[in-house]
Length: 264
Image (cartoon, rainbow, N blue to C red):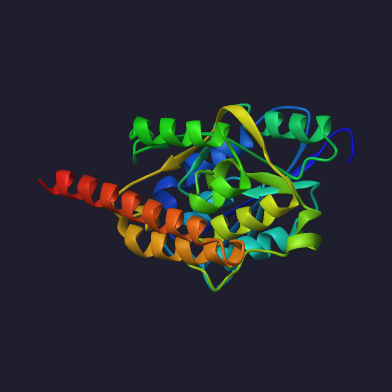
């Protein structure tokens, strides 16, 4: 890897003008000892997103074309990337200051490292922190990483994850047949290459709101999550399968309770 790593970051987007400007600013404001290749893969937005992105001409690469969904959009951006390190941040999420500098330092310090992830806040539509207990829980789980633990539960926050582009030669790209768990299934493939480094600093913010994919479709999300994990579970490991099923039931029950409290 060059002394100054080249980081390629992809943002898939479709009609997210409400949040997209904040996402782009959080990326382009990053500073540190790295080169940035920032790509927005737009799916054909009609809500003013393209006009907004036009303000950043020369600072990012924009492709606007029909795609087959979020995973396909990310794959298109990653396939075009020429960086040493790659990742993606969704069009309603944010990077925290210093995030990419910490990513670059981690890969520069450890030539054997395949991937990293880090701490993640949860914010609302106005960027205000919410669900601090969820963020704290995931933080604790991240600090006790093992591949088996990852099979039982996805505690890795997508927008904090970066990996060496060379990993695609070993594990391929995102599985476009998955709608909700394509990130988790990809972490399991990366995890088979080696354990990640946890960056103990605020790396990103995940935006949660009622109509987001995670907010509105959580039951289907965790069903697909379980199916993805079982692809990679050791054959015959009944205990792991039982643990996964129980954890899924616990998480879905917690989400249902939160939904009932909001409606009440």
